[in-house]
Image 1 (cartoon, rainbow, N blue to C red):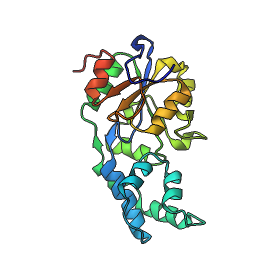
Image 2: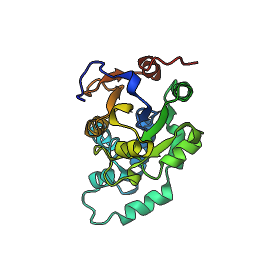
Image 3: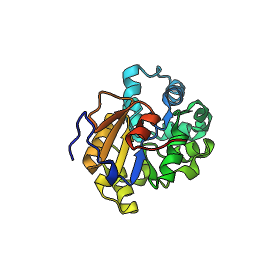
Image 4: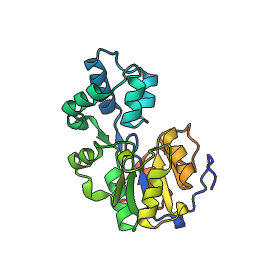
Length: 219
């Protein structure tokens, strides 16, 4: 199943829709930028540049820290500060993508499994709890749940295995090159969300676009 810039998705085969978190379910740019800038400031480093933020926004926490603190032989002090700081105070700056709840409810009514594949780790549970979204997904896989996070396909493979689905029965919605590569590696359908530069089977700019693509009647 090759990726292209035109619609090739066989909608009738899809049984589960898998979402990336940051940049798809939520606009997390402000929250994540504030989080990492607070961390950098504590260690006397300047705020993230736009180029740095673009990379950190895709990375796992471990990858982000290795990238931002290459001079450190041990990340013990960084992790200690992160533990004290927590992410809870930044969740309020995460904005739920407009139309998301309506789309998720429509997917439920039509029998689709709703899942998350994210390179977040221990913050994902808090994000779903604070936004009262814990019951809206049948399965959530984070970077902490697999050996190799995105861009490796492990998160998507784990979902397919657990739900006993084939690659062509999965639609993955992501916004980064990591997501694109994960979908390609897993052999799933891929929809690029608000990122026209990605190679995808379909490009969407809103949750309504996704609903229309799947021929859903959203109330």
